Image (cartoon, rainbow, N blue to C red; front, side, top):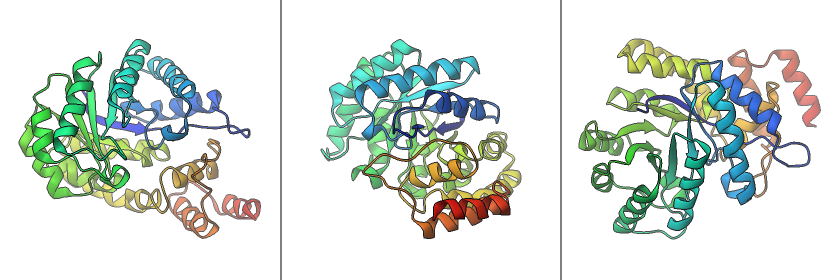
Length: 305
């Protein structure tokens, strides 16, 4: 049901720092025109911690309406460290027509493995749409272990896992444990090739905000078992995948989109602008991929002073 490239989209803001509907719709169209299977709004890349409850639902509304015009699936960001709130977000996403819910491991509370199991089981029991688990220990300080994922994989409403553990060994263990009960997605752009080579079914990507077509080509090659093609595309993408994480996500990806003319505004505090040093690194990478010509690079450097 779920496989391929899903872009974890940024949330565009205007000059006043408010949600920019037009920019969000344009960005979704850009993704649709370049081969993605679906959109993931209100995740980490979408700055969900700084969205008001009203904005969160508004992003759902805009994204789902626009995505459906282009036959894109929507996996809505519904995670919370409050189980009841996560359930409520899943229900809100379902009513609006989302295809699935992305649910992160609870942050700050720091539940043990039994707590994680009961959290996800409760959400899956009450959600009207399928659930994609999201494991990202670097953000939450909690690691959803393979044995817990295996237990969860028997729930009929838990259909996928986005794994950003950073451990190939752990991801492989998960894939081998869950067989085909669960579709495992890379949550680390630079590990997409490796994870799909051992049975992953796609990626929830930050980098595809900027280069969706090439990332889509990589994922489709791997789904077609064209490993040499996938390897070459992975090599080609490696530099920009790394550049998207030279600072806290989504600072670099928003900066990159703004540099290439896809205006999405700034990040909200407590995230700040990309430093001039990192901006120069990012400009060089964008020039390498011919996304930013030399004149544009010089112009952006002037504007950044």
